[in-house]
Length: 183
Image (cartoon, rainbow, N blue to C red; front, side, top):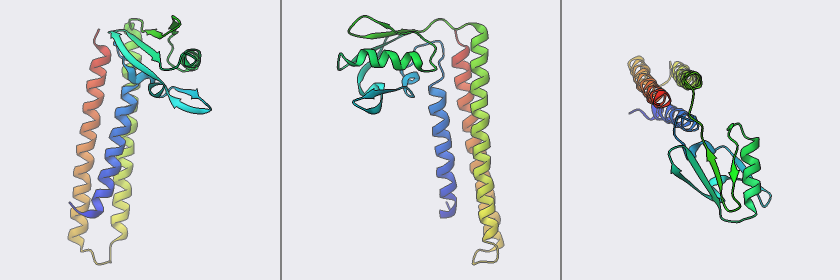
C-alpha cells in the first residue's frame, strides 16, 4: 500500500475504534462494566476512572458490583454515579456498591437503536471526511513527481479503504442494534 494512503487508513481505524468505544457505553439488556468507562471519581485530587480505584464485576446479568479498594472511596464513587448520565441509583451496603439495571422497555430499546444508528452515521461522515481530505491532498500533488495514473490509483485505493471501513461501521451498528433489541 502507498505510504500516503497509510495516514488515511490509520485515521479511519481510529474512527472505528472511537465508534466501538461509544457503542460499548450504550446499555443493552445486560449489565456491561463499559458503561462506567466515562465516569470519573476524585481520587486524591485527580479525576480517575472507577476501574482504577475499585474492582468492578458482573455477578448477575443485570447487576454491576463495584468494590472500592479503599473504604473512603464508596461515597465518592456513589456520588459520581448519581451525577452521571447513567440514570441508575446505586445501592451501597458499606463495603460495596451495586448497580441494578432495570429491564429495558420496548420503547427505550428503540430509542437506544436510534442512538446506535446516529453514532454509526456520525462515524460514516467522519470516514467520508477523511476520504475527502485524502482526495484533496492527492489533487495538490498534481504536477509534482507523481503521474496522473498514480494519482488515479491512489484515489481508487482510498475509495476502497472508505468502502471497507463504511462496511465495518454498518456491521458494528447492526451487531449493537441486535444486542439492544434482544430481550
